[in-house]
Image (cartoon, rainbow, N blue to C red; front, side, top):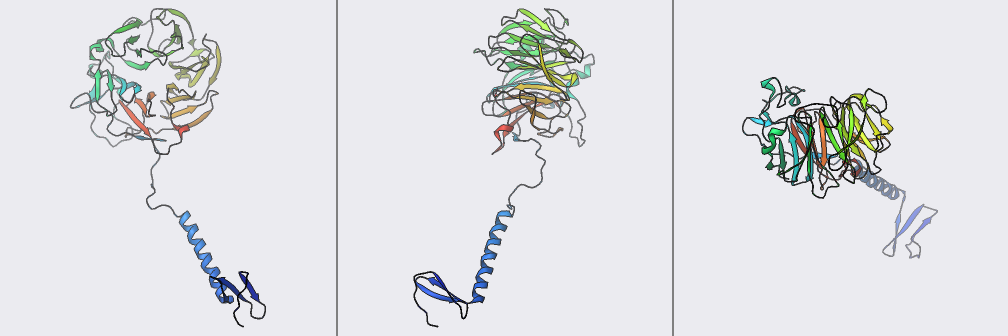
Length: 396
């Protein structure tokens, strides 16, 4: 059969079932065996493409347990501050004003622990305090309040005020204060302190030094503070008392609420406080394993049960509540209806593990700082590349 030119791309011959394919204007006959080979090659090519898509990358990460969730640990931050043979004491407070101004409130310096291979660390740093009746449980009382920069170097230490502190608990700066005063809550001293930003001036003191009480002028182991936009503030009081006390911006007593118990408006260790944009007050009712919500006048609104041991409580600017749980050692994210949205965290003294996330803070570069109260350290974590923004603790 002679070849011929045709305007269409393919034709068929009924007598021999040949297919003529136009290649560069020339029709080339293809019999059944040629077509079969072409189909086989096409199938192999497709299978190869699928295999390449499904085949794992040779350089992909293997193993691991995702211990730090959406973050990665910043190694060797902060640097040692207590000198040879000593490490951080129980670290109860951290507040990141910026990456170059991270305030750390800790309970002195403890002898460095030897390396250990067990699961549980051989020492609970939070059992040490300046007023411990056991001399062996008194830390070296230095570097109680420090300021650390992004490289982990201590750029300031308020050692001139060490005599005021007994058992540091929280360090905070009001988001509404243009002067950026630093507030320190010391449950062992039974006091709340307000300092100038540079620590040179003590601007306000509430409570009487080492004198517990349950009245307008005294606390019994206060724990935390939170502010309204006009500067009025609430103090949670605390480990021994079971109340929330409201003060005016100049420190004048206004009112209080709370009593011992497990019912609405009753508390068992009032451990932390935050306030949302609607002026609702969220209380970490630690011993009752819940968060209670009140209006700004102390009227009960709601509660979130089954939060085992809320140590830290933090309100992000995007209006989510984050909890550091002291039993499960997880960082927990809730919406304002109390729905659990996300969690991560693993118990351990290894870098990135947690044992008592007592206060958390976030700087303006989204780095997360965690005060690890039982181990005695503060850890800095930065977002992993490509981390889901919804899984990152929001800025304040």
